[in-house]
Length: 139
Image (cartoon, one colour):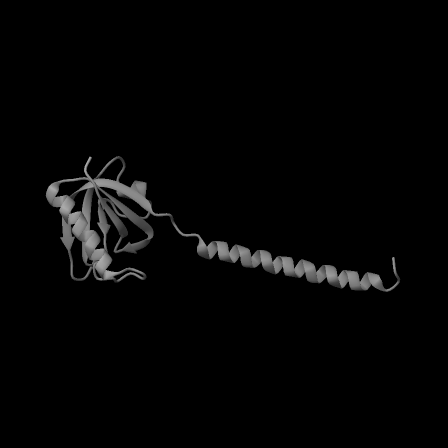
């Protein structure tokens, strides 16, 4: 080994090690921030609709679901009801889209048809999860 080179190698090794630690910490922080609950698809027939001026984002629908209750299929959500947030009280929700989803659920209620509601378990309105999408279909 070249005399005097060893201290320089030690400094280089420490800098590289420090940079790798910073990179690892940044990657873990990014992963923690970017991981969110995946949407859950709930299938059922609407059996009640609700409009409220103060709670639940303004509008909800109760579903007679296939299989387990909503709270089992989507932990953290209340039983039976899905909130559509027609007043756009939650972050990143849209009044127009919410009202269209609610209207689609009302159509299924009137026709007694099954719908699929995709809910986000990380957006909760007074104990009930937010329905971000509604699919109407005929079986």
